[in-house]
Image (cartoon, rainbow, N blue to C red):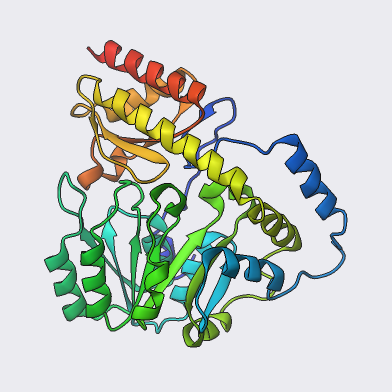
Length: 356
């Protein structure tokens, strides 16, 4: 054990729950599969896949499709990663050993997890109570005091689901001497983006993923930023990091955006319905969401018992309460198909009835 850094020894591995046999509403996935005709077109594309060859190291065709669909302006480039996780890792690996990284708490756990694994100084600024909004004065003070090399802001935020005030984000970008990464993993459900503002700030980058869109199994994320910055990050990126099956499959899927637009609309409609029904349950406090999940607060010290009772009824959601702080007594549910959502709501009602 002496060969491992103390930061690694002090960490816990990221655990993923075994969802076999459950209605899976814990991981912010799109619950809809492809129609048979789309599947057939996809399989036809894969027939030309040369598995004996290394993939295109620059994924040129896929990158061009992403550029076109996101209307990425000239002078800005795209970095592809094996999910957003690898992009976060690439960004942080490029930093000096004494660099600071800033985000908010609670937010996407990988910002801190990867920072800690690399021995970087991580600063987590608590969100404001109840509203989960940015504590702008505290963030600006931390920027002045610590000069973070990178700031991560999830927009919408995970696990709270809310959109931070856009003007507050602009103030943070302006105040920062380092890079500001706007993580737009849930952009399809929010219909807002900082992509159009890339040309206004030299230090702004926008990160997205196709996972929440409905392609979680392909593990594809991308980062958009100035050509000079992306050039440096490519030096850290491992060669052939996007395999040939992911390149072909993602490119094919993105050309059928109407399919995903329709699925996204269904999820947003169901989100509104679930939110309303949760709000009518005694003892439950719901928080507005611009993502494909809803965070809700349970009665004091009941979250784990409610989570367990729901799981015993065959529905798996996410217990956020063990993280403590602003997430104490909170659970998070991913929006599924209508029947899955009804099963969750029934299971929650039953759990609340048992607890009295």
